[in-house]
Amino acid sequence: MLGATGSIGVSTLDVIRRHPQRYQVFALTACRSVEKLYHQVLEFQPRYAVMTDADAAAELRQRLAATAVTTEVLAGADALVDVAKADDVDQVMAAIVGAAGLLPTLAAAEAGKRVLLANKESLVMAGPLFMRAVEEGGAQLLPIDSEHNAIFQSLPGQYQGDFTQHGINKILLTASGGPFRGYSAEQLQQVTPAEAVAHPNWSMGQKISVDSATLMNKGLELIEACFLFHCQPEQVQVVVHPQSVIHSMVQYCDGSVIAQLGQPDMRTPIAYGMAWPERIDAGVAELDLFALAQLNFEAPDATTFPCLQLAADAFAAGGTLPAVLNAANEIAVEAFLAEQISFTAIPTAIRAAMQAHTWQAADSLDDILQADDWARHFTRDWLAHACRQEDAF
Ligand code: NAD
Ligand code: MG
Image (tube, rainbow, N blue to C red; front, side, top):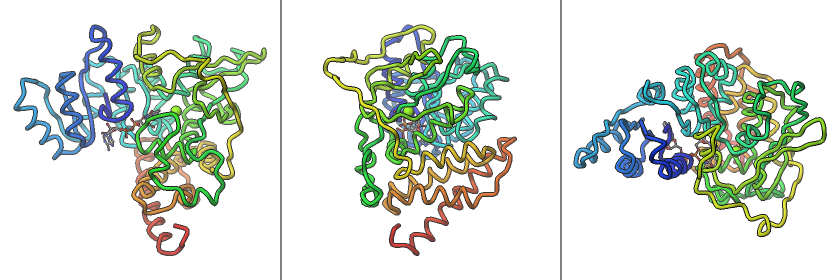
């Protein structure tokens, strides 16, 4: 469990809790939330607990010493990689947020694990490299992102990446539209972090909640879909569907559209990925269509929410551009959450980073990590500079 204390981590542990005969936790990891991890360790008693923050690890070790639990506490980012590829591990839930998830998720792929991919940022940053690692390592990559999980469920079982062979016309990638759906650019200038993280349908971590509000989440998901399902952005239509009940669809050449529906509850895709090809109880309430009554659809507003197009541009450019997009977004979202910049400065900063970046091929992990690092520095500097210069920030 990479990222055990987060929103996806907690939902995953809830699924595991319902199936004690079926699953055993090998390692739980977190960045620095000692309190949460401590209670999770007491309940699930994994062989290892990893905290990337050394002080947090020391504190956890001390607290566990006073209990009967024999879990060994490891510290540092290297330990994430070690547990992700350990021999006794069958499946790895990749639920760290952001680029910090790349190395352990990649290690799990290289080691041939079943990789349950929630951490979309690692695929966005390093798509070709990551997909190669999956293939060479003999890993099973199962998408946990609800849309991609729905697409996976709606594609033919034998799908290997060829749309034509299976009569597939298009992927219909649904989006809730986030809390600011229908807002004008002027209205967006004024929105606060508290408003941005209050998602209408899903309860999620702060970063992905802001991404949903800017539509960058859909942009990252567009890239994620292109890598996972071997297709081009033109073959993916984003459909705004405010109820978040249809989690995505696949349109076939005979006019059929196959969709996956369900409550907006991540335990459904998590349980699906964990048990695939079987199905297990996820603790999710039945969908009540009578109570729901309506499903609505509209086109995305790509002008007011430029992040979607920025992501499509980054994918089209390829090389190091997706890593730059991702890193600039992480820094800008952090600054917005810290109330240092306005909501509308997020896409402006990302665009500036993409324009300033010198394109490079992303043949190696080093190329990607260097681009990531460059974009973080650039965006921090750019925001600090722009903050002083323009009232808009
Ligand atoms: P979150 O912020 O709730 O949790 C993040 C987890 O990652 C925590 O356990 C934290 O300790 C750990 N973490 C953070 N920084 C770290 C670092 N530097 N090193 C090691 N660990 C670190 O996030 P979340 O909402 O659970 O999202 C996790 C991932 O899943 C993201 O990539 C997100 O895009 C994806 N995802 C989430 C949802 C959702 O419903 N929450 C849905 C689809 C995809
Ligand atoms: Mg999603």
